[in-house]
Image (cartoon, rainbow, N blue to C red; front, top):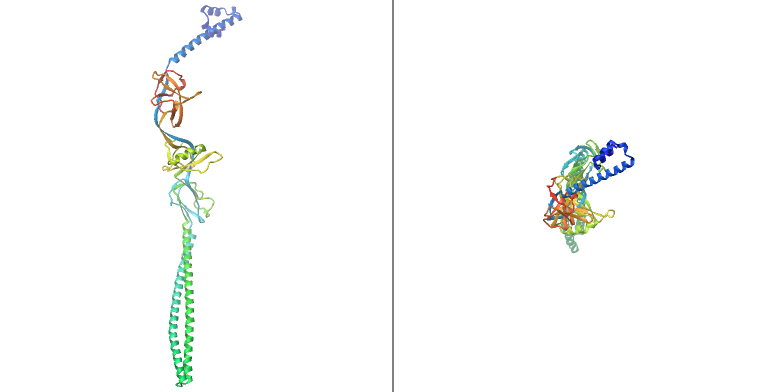
Length: 453
C-alpha cells in the first residue's frame, strides 16, 4: 500500500492521500482498484505532457552539423583490387661441380649484386685437371712442330728428285744422240760393232735412270702428302688440347659461385663444410630480384574492353598501397594475360614497379589502384555526405536560413574521400557531411567545425 501511494501520490487530492494514509483498512478491494486506476491516469497524462514539452523544445533546438561546399575538380577513373607482390625474376643457385663447400660469403636475406661472390667449392681436382690439359696441349704443339719439319724435309726431297730427273733426262738425251751417231758410223763401216753396242747400253741405262728418278719423285710427293696429313692431325690434336684446357678452366671457374642477378637472398640451404653435388635438386640458395618487382592482380572480364580501350591510348598507371602506409608505390601495367580464367571469370594483370626503396617484398598483399583516365571538372562532394534511403541516395543541402532540405542525387565514381555527383547538385552549394542522423527536412542546424583526424 505504501508502494502504491509513493507511485500514484501525484494523482490524488491532498485530503484523499491523507485519508488513505490514516485509514487503509477501511478501503475495500474495489475501492483500491478504482483509486489506483484514477492515480495511473493522472500520472500518464502528466508524463505525456512533459514528453510533448521536451519534444517541442528539441524540435526548436538547432542540430549541430558539419558542412562542406560542393566543388569541381579533376577526378581519376580508378579500379581498386587486392594484389600480390611477386619477384621480377627468381634464380635457384646450384653448384655445377661436386665437392666440399669451403666458403659462404653472404648473409641470409642480404641484398646482393650481380657478379658478387657467394660460395667457394674445393677446387684442387679442377686445378690438377687444368694442369694436365695444359701439359697435353704443349705436347701437341711440339708434335705439330715435328710434323711441320718432316713436311719441309719431304718437300726438299721432292725438289732434289726433280733436279736429279732433269739432270738424268739431259744425260739420257745425250746418250741417245751418241748412240744414234755411232750407229750411223757403224753402218758406214767406220767403227766396230762393240763400240755401237757400248753407246746403246749407255743410252738404255740413262733411260732407266730417268724412270727411277720419276718414281723417286712420285714417292717423295707421296711423302709430302703424308707429312701434310700428319701436320693437320697434330694441329687438330692441339685444338683438342686447347679445348680440354678451356673446359678445365671452366670447371675450375665453377668452384667460385657468383650471383647471376641483383636481388635478395633467401634461406641458406647448405652450410659451409658440407659436401655438395653438382646440379643438385636442392639449391644452395634462392635469389629473388626485387628491383624492379611485379604486383599481380585480377580484374573481372567485364572490365576488359574498357581496359583495352585505355591501354591503346598509352601506358596505364597503377599504384600499390601497403596496409598501414599512406605512401603509395607507383608503377605501370606491363602485362595483361592473353586469356580469361574460366574458373573465376577474371583476367590476370601485372604491374611493374621500380621498388627503389625496397618497400615491396615478394608474397606481400597490397591494395592496387589502377588509373584508367581522368574526368575533368567533375562535381564532387565528400563521400560521407551521401546518404542512402528508401527512395535512393540523397544529401542534406543547407539553406540560407540555416535549415536543411533533402536533395536526391545521382552518384558516380568514388575516389578516396571524394564522390562524383552526376546529377542533383551545383558547385558552391553547401551540404551536410556529419550529423545527418538527427536531421529531418526543414530542420534548423548549427554549423560546427569538423574534427581533424
